[in-house]
Picture (cartoon, one colour):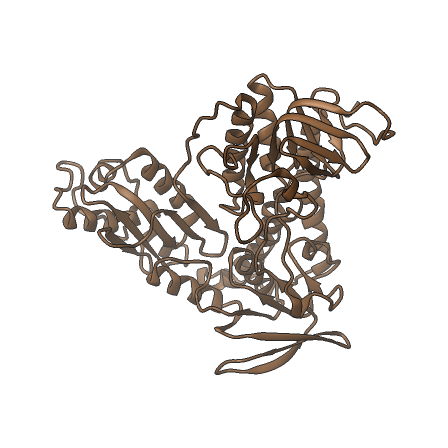
Length: 479
């Protein structure tokens, strides 16, 4: 039997616990688990228990759509290898049906974790603060806790020009429910969500135009890496950067007008708004919590302990608007849950170097710190890299950053296999690896990893550190 409690008569006994966690997403699940592991009596409070954002409307459905786009793209470029399968026929309803079917499987896996909770732990209700560690549920019950974890996630933002234009205005929370691919699509916002879905739809045969007020895509830190990303996206998507847009509903679609050197207007069947996901804090009555709020109404917190001031309240995941990534939410949830269980004793948790991936093709990634004063850099050009060239996808670049001793501090990359290379680089940064030390590692030939050697050698040269002796007998052809 599911531990999720049904709504009860308000007259029933109020609830008490050591740690109350508001929100059953990735951060909330991790917080509840960590608090219970630390010996706390826990309650996990959520109005729906629908599963995580990642499974429902984030990571997994978007990657399912991207996978379909990769299949179509592979068929179109097959002739470069002498293989001629013909133009692919895109069955839009079948594409979207598979996205939803596989998405629902991932969601079911997440929901199954709720059934494993101790009886009575999961409380299906909305909660709001009526004191620093006291909550009121929308079924009339009160929750008295020693500590509270806020893990309410985020929600898609729809700015005023697009807010009341009907169902043709999409977000990442609604686009996967389309029964068929759009006839045409405007994407507002050149961040990770906008880029991934714009390129995927473009490769599936949808005419896509991406609009952004800025001229920097994907928050890319390195100019060379950004240029590689922009070139890649522009092959599948029309880019209108540095523009302001206005929108209105018309018969059969949404009319967009935009400013700039290439000002114009066009009717699109749908518009995807991907301009950010602010914290979902509405309805929490944070004023009653006594917490100090920043200019955006978000509680001020310590990202090493996740504690809000010296209060018995902790924040984790997208709700704190710090680093809205799944692995960060899981880490933050574990830190918050542990410290909530041991409050008033709190201990700083270990945080990994910054690590963000955008699943474009080629992937965009950033690791650790970026360019800056005193930072040593080295660059590898993948436009003629051996393994990438054999696969007809030689493009992009990698920029590595290091300190004066040659220790890697970060990386920016947009190149084939960038999602996997970025993991190796993130592990290298976290472990304190040096450029010299990495060059002592084995590099199989021919691989994409070999392409990192050029950047590592440049860092060795700039930091006046000798390349490892007896390890490198020259560069094989095509490395």
